[in-house]
Length: 630
Image (cartoon, rainbow, N blue to C red; front, side, top):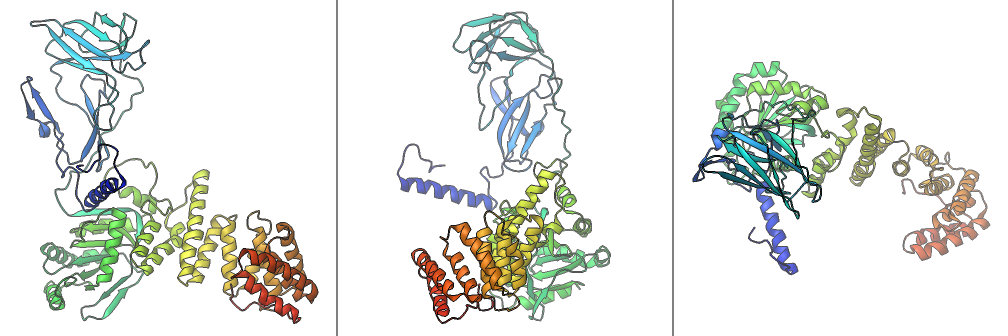
């Protein structure tokens, strides 16, 4: 905060401020905290002379990293309760004041008539009888503390006193008023200009909250992290204990725990020994284990193989194992840091529970017991919605399910982008391809509106993201599959259909491409381009079974009429159709018009191609597209 500008500054100073914030947030991502993980505190006022730390006794000493506090008498019992907003989970916590009611109180709610209705700014004096007389003061504020607003009820703690002499309200911008006849332990509504005071009862529609049974916080590792949305496991390429390349493929017969360990790690030794001792139980529960050594990934690797082999043989480990490669560890670090926003160094032991289709169900940072694995193996078989519900440590209602097929927000496309930026193209493709099986993994919402939005978003990702990246990687057949799936979801998605037709044409599936182009003739957005491409296919396809000069002329003429004979590509297609029909004089006139329009639009590309075709027509030859030319 020392870099916070106090007044208007130049651009360089502002840049320093932004850099400081970036560095600070990087520290938070690496496990740091603004507060250093201090526990929340509560201090008890002792007779106005000193304060005692009552945090533990009051139940305040939670490691929530609290930020904002709102005061309210939630259950209308005269004791102030607290709503607390936190940076960590739970993000919102209600602390009910269950202390013994030995003393007395008075609560006042003001309603302005001449001043603002909420009476913000009013100063209230409560005069108590007794020896000595006592005057208590409260001011009604519009905000309390950091990013918080407490209840507008003003509370007075009376201690053992009960006799109230009067209440004086100094309304904002107006004169003072006195109110008589108030009794202790009541909630009063006081209206400006009305001498009466009205006793207020608890609201009939007050929300009734059921206390959540939260698990006690763990002091340290291990951490079990079930995923609300499963993620594909990156390619499992490693080296066996003889140093030879090895891999594990999916789908597999049963769930797989991929465990990373090191021979110098005491927790790893204990965990692997438990796996070995519980082999029969784990296999009966349907779990296979792949234990990969992280020895030697940094520093001197000369002794790593021998140390790892001796370590695993000494345990008589009955499951498969080997050595993790630096590439595998780096890919998993990218995945872990992206989906969990955790930039801390990759620890050992660390494990990933992968279902039989190759999707990660849970991550274990630290050790995991065989009992927990057996429980989570059942989670592998659960439906996505059930799995998402069971991933939470306490019951609740989803405001928005974490299963939406979005690219941002921690979903598959977000991780794919992180892999792509890091140079892991195969892993990025694996994640983009994950959308091909998304409809099988995650059920479509039942509601009509929600289902339509779901279809729209998934179809958009399949057509604009998945198919594009697969095609760029040379995996055109898979790109075609993505576009077909997008059209099953949204048959009217014309860009997807046009791209599908283009890829089919490139793959020499001229008949299928022509059918897709024809389906777009009436589309207001893609109709002109589709007719132009279809006419060129019918006029110049290398497949004689596809060519039909007269139909090509008819379709190209429609395209030219739509464009007002101002589109060079439509005129180019019409010229090719004329040439295919033997009408070379008309072809030359038309191609000359196309050439003139193309020269002014894009002389380096389309104009050069049209000029080559013009020379063919001059020699009375039709144009033929090379196979897979587009």
